[in-house]
Each structure stands twice: as structure tokens, then as C-alpha cells.
Image 1 (cartoon, rainbow, N blue to C red):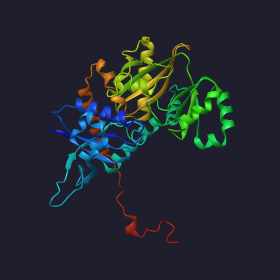
Image 2 (cartoon, helix red, strand yellow):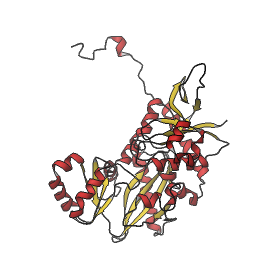
Image 3 (cartoon, rainbow, N blue to C red):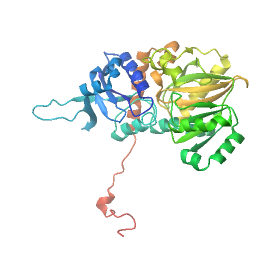
Image 4 (cartoon, rainbow, N blue to C red):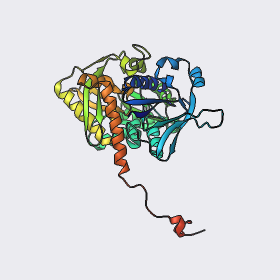
Length: 391
């Protein structure tokens, strides 16, 4: 019997379109004899829509037309089972009701990949693929991510951070701290965005304010770190769960400028290819000992955050400092699900998707064995006004 999989994608994020590309790629690669696919498109305003046509990337060229031809839906739970439904009823209306057994979120960026959608699935009890709320949230906030890794002895570049209101009220002090602790050149980036959105390399103090203003247009929390002048970026994916995980081959993205840009990642070879459009070297041309070090840190990062499913961890290598390696960031739902890093390792995309769905069901089974209720009712035993009674 086929498994009913709801694929969630889109969302209120600057990476909305990238999510659509990643999801359509995945749906085309899922085994048709094993899964019934239920596409659920999340609009930029957070509404759910369904249409079987959403497996075709071309229908997203005219969103207004697509939504007019699709059904606005919600997820409901009835007698322990989950359905995608439009809620319609009546003599002349046909109710849409698609049973689903697991959710497969393929979303990127804030309001989605940051634990928001995982929290929704946790709340209603729907099994799902990918990282849980905590690992996704920590992975999205670059400041928290660095703090957690540093506490576990995993190398990251030192940084300072501040909020928009602090910048407005105490700019002189912050600039002085940046000059003293970081120096130039440096990198300014939003603390909670991906896909290189809002990231600026700053070579002198005269460029700093404009760079901060740009980053603050995307996020209220800004991170500043040293720029590596002889930089090589190396990426590695990790697949698994808390019990067992393994690394993929490593890649080296080819940058068109001093830092890897959104254009490099998604536009250089075609807008409909997602992360597969990025020019890259696979496997990365690095010494064997550095490859092993990166893979080790990738798996340690995965375990430290308690990740699940497939992630991509991005590293910075300082060629001017004996190829010293730093963990840069993690993508808990990576673009194109990083399938291009697993196929060279002998894992076809179709089989990888099987494994991800299996991991989602495994976590749900483990959670079902835990106790989440306590068999008492303080409201029925006179405790309605708390331990101090009625005031």
C-alpha cells in the first residue's frame, strides 16, 4: 500500500522561490509506486493551497492563476488520522479530503526552516521529515549556533552581534567594539537568513554603516565576523538521526566574487535548477586530512544540535593560515536537499528520499513511546485558582 506524503513548500521567506524549486525536484524524484504525493503550497502570506498540478514548476510562473485553480486547504485531525481538506460541505459542493501519513517540509529560511513549521507539526502530532524545533531554531540563528558549537569545542569564527535598536542608540560604541575586536576586512550578515541574502563584505569603516543598513533591512539582529582574505568554502552534507549519522562527499562552490552570493547559488545556470545551478567542484580538491577533519566536524555539529534527516554544513577554510577550518553555518533543510552531494557517494536521490521518510516515521514511533500527560485533573479537585486560592 502506498504511503500518503504531504510535501509542504513555499512560505513567508525571502527563499520562497528556492523552496518551490527544491520541492518540485524532490516530488519528481519520489517513487511513484511507493508514495501518493499531496503538494501543499504555502503562500507568502502563510495560507495553504493544494493542486495536483503543483508538481510542475511551470505552473508557478503565474501564481495568481495557480491559486485561482487550486483549493485553499487546512490540515485536520480526525480520530487519530490526518487529512488535507478544504472544509467544504453541502449538497452542491465536493469536499476535498486527502489522507496524509507524514509531512515532508521542503522550506527554506525564516518563518519556515527556523523551527516554525516543525512546531506546527509537533503541535498537531503529525509525523514529519527533517529537524525538530530546537535544532532547526538554533541552526537558523547564527549567533546561537556559534555559541552552542563553541561550547562543544567545534571551531567557529569569533563574532560580535547587536540588535537594530542598539545600533540606532549606541552606534559609536558598537563601531568602536567592531574596530577593536574584529578589524577589517569583515563580514556583515543578518543573524537568521540563508542563501547569502543580506551579506556584505566590508573593507573599511567608511563602508560599515551602509552594509549594516542593508543587513538590517532583512533582520533585526546583525552578526559581524572577520573576513578571511584567502578564503575557500567547503560544504558537507550529513544524513541520519541521533542514533547514527554519516557524511557525504565534500564540495567546493565556485564563487564569482569574494563571497558566495545568492546569484552564484541559484541563478548562474538557470533559475529553475535551485542549488544544482551552482558551479562547484565535487569532490572538493582538498588534502585528505582536511576532508576527514571537515567530515568529522560536520557529524559533530549534526549530533550537537540533535539534527534529523539531511542537513548541509558550510565550512570556511583559511588558506593563509595552514588551511584552518571553521564551521560557518548549517542548513537544516538544504537547497535541493543536497542530493548532488549524495549521488557521488553512491546514494541515488530516490533512495535518499526513502531514507528521509523512514527517519521521520522512526522519530514518530520513538515519540509515541514517551509520556506527555499526567493522569490527574487539578481543575476537578478544587485547584482552579492555583495554590494560593482565589484572590
